[in-house]
Image 1: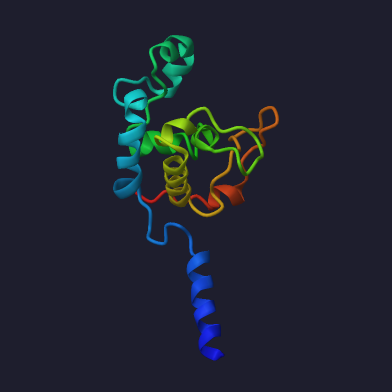
Image 2 (image 1 turned 45 degrees about the vertical axis):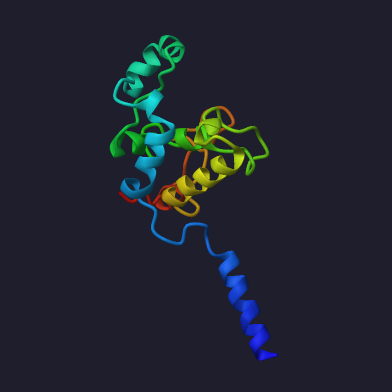
Length: 156
């Protein structure tokens, strides 16, 4: 009886473990994922965010988004000044009951790969750090709180 109870506890613990128990880092995990799925539109040929916003229509027609091909540039779309931009665009919409972000489809060739890569991004951002909030509230999107910012991990 005790043996069965212990086996059940071990199985329950393994099932409840996060998908990525090892530390997820930008260098080891996110940079290769970004290179595989995002670099074509967000690489060194893409404009920095302020330039992108000035000519958004032009760059969008050229299939270019804001440049995010380095750790600091990517972080600027997570923490500040473009707080939550990555999360809003990569999110699958399941937590909010809404539709997926406009870049979710680029996370992989099928939904299984997209979900795996989304889980990797979420693990990197940190438990409780993945939120769709902005730096300042706009429309129905609230401002990020200090508590939410404190949950960001973003290990290099």
